[in-house]
Image 1: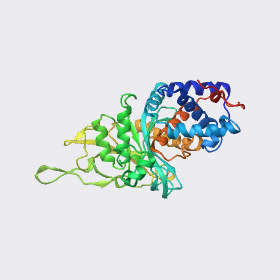
Image 2: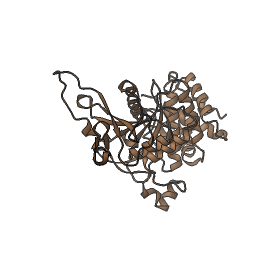
Image 3: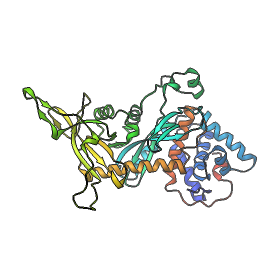
Image 4: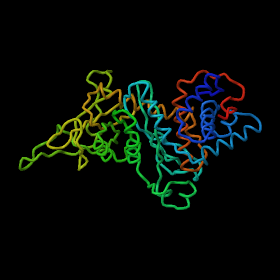
Length: 394
């Protein structure tokens, strides 16, 4: 998106939107700079640095002052980001029927070692290890797109166990190095009373321990579709055999072994895009699911999606009883979520936060999410003068 100054109608819409989302801010100057930061994310061309955003708000010495004020608002001001995210969630779920909650991992590359949460991680899409922040996000997916409504930040022991690093980054006391799945459960719990009940679709990045996550979601009565690795162990229901003393014995196999690559019977015919089979989960992870039970254990369904010319095959575990036509819209919602993350990075400043504090990062991510929610429907951008949004102190 080649950002440009907003039209008067667009500027007025930013003000109305900001007044709703950031109404919980008690100070007038905080609400003013929330509007200005939101405007900068939408109108500044190129990277959404503080200087670029300030230049979209003012010129000359006033731009330098605006940059300092934006810096103070996002990094120094101790405002609570959670009420704004609840408002965003309600707005996202209000316009269209919610198809799913979706979750994925946003990877934010970083150069140095000072940005809060920065660590080295192997990124499957890049095929290499990168220095980055990693952020599980929760989204509301409709038939239109997926809107971000909450975020968490992965912190390894290098951050949580170092008192000096914790103090510099203002990491709250008691915050432990939770796995991505645990952070996702926290987001689900925070928004359980805000969002309507819908399946949770989570891709590989947040399913570090998918069976533990599956059990925790089942205990919360949240239906799920979780991406698992090809090496995930499962027990195929159809291969159950009777052993000694009449006991049922299931062989444990990997997900990829259940779906061997095979050529279509008719030369040139397309391979099936989505194939599924009922499975049992190994070990004690079997919390009751929605698909029934076999010999006292909950029956799940494992789906294989893609492969061949369509791209790498991916595997999904679910407690939903839907057949392929019912699962495909959920997989499409997962794809829409990845598209949103790409757009957040290219158009709305996801990759551009330059602060080092935990609170500042959450402030920035909240404003990025708000900019995306608003930017989809914003009127045209034609204004060239200093925005009224900055001149107006009320």
